[in-house]
Image (cartoon, rainbow, N blue to C red; front, top):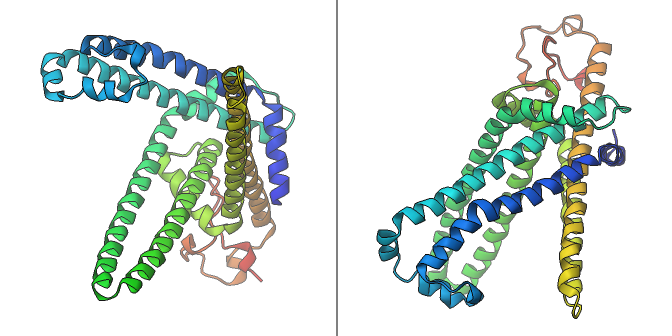
Amino acid sequence: MRYTEAIQTGLKTINRNWQLVLIQLGAVFASFVGFFILVGIPLAIAFIIFGLDLTEFSRIEDVFRAFRGPSEILSKYFALVILVLTSLLLYLTVVLAVGIFLFGGSMGVIIQSLSSRTEKFQMKVFFAEGRRLFFPLVGFTSLIGLIFLFWAFLLGLLGGLVSAIVSVAKEQEATLALFLGIFFSLILSVIGLALVLATLSVTVYGSAIMTMKGTGPVKSLKEAVRYVYGYADAFYLYCLVFVGYLFITFVVAALSYPIGRIPLIGSLMALMYQLAAYVVESYFGLVMIAAVFCYYYSSTAEFQATKQATPQDDDLGQDPTEDSDTSVPQVHGQDGLPPEKDPGKES
């Protein structure tokens, strides 16, 4: 499948399931209401007890004055501090849980829409997919979070090594130290960007694998890594749609500045524009996911069709017990299908 076909199919899929955008908007509104209820009210009570004048909250020195003696505050209002921290933790937990549920439901609806082009959006399918994928997504996102922490730790070590090299070079010659600092900074930036894009692409394709096949977090992660490694075009597609999404987000955010500068009605128009901007960003974010899912879905079907049309390894005089891990990912192993060699390598 061509990139343009995948993007066009993603657009058609989200247009057919436009209710997903409204669900995202409703979730954001509910998160704002939940923040004021679970966090805002305890914070307001804490500010009043600490003697902070809420009418002068715009003055940042009032905040520092209220928290000038943290040990005294903790000893005097320990129960209230625990209440505020607990409410904040509860709010973050609820937001994360709802976000994972919505993401799972959206992925399930997108996959079902791709497999049945005529099927329309159904709320019962959305909730069923959200419940089915909730706990697998919790485990999968936890694994991805650990991977990001590992990359951050690795880049931190490399950054410390670069700093040591630059410090030694600075003792010899300042020009050399400046050159090495810029050079290694660029290298680390490129490595960090490549790691982030690769991990994000594995995340999206792993989510597609989990949704389509119902595999667990670890198996989905392994298959996604093999798929992205074996199909460079899939990684390039993700980079293309991700850069496009960032560009659209930047343009939408840049337009909000002149709107807010309009006299009298600028603030009201900026608020309305932010609401419309979030709808646009949610729409194109779903389109990005749908395009990637469509590409994986089509490549899987095409690869399985190609495997069925090609001879078996035994017919080619090859050892059937040969390790199949060196082949292109078996797209990704529909259960019950034996591992095959890459059809592109057969003559």
